[in-house]
Image 1 (cartoon, rainbow, N blue to C red):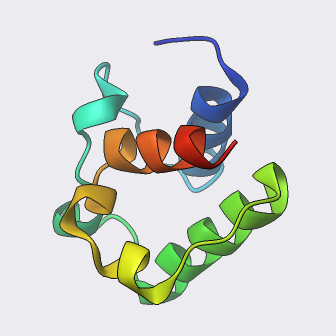
Image 2 (image 1 turned 180 degrees about the horizontal axis):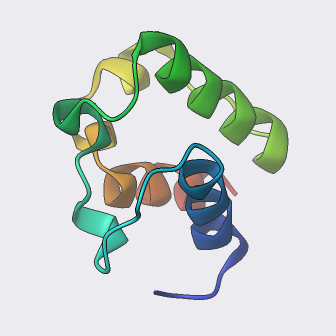
Length: 80
């Protein structure tokens, strides 16, 4: 796993909830896997916005590419 603040954020978020993070975190489909309920997904998005001082539009949240950690990482990095 890469050692950037963004990767560390996701690793910490999932581990704090007792979710084992796969080796290739970028392809982890956290929405389809069902490891997070809708409230946890909202919590994840809110924490991302606070941690990195960014915001997501409704369209971005509905975009399928953001249903994976890699997609969210790309979106975060594009906003920084």
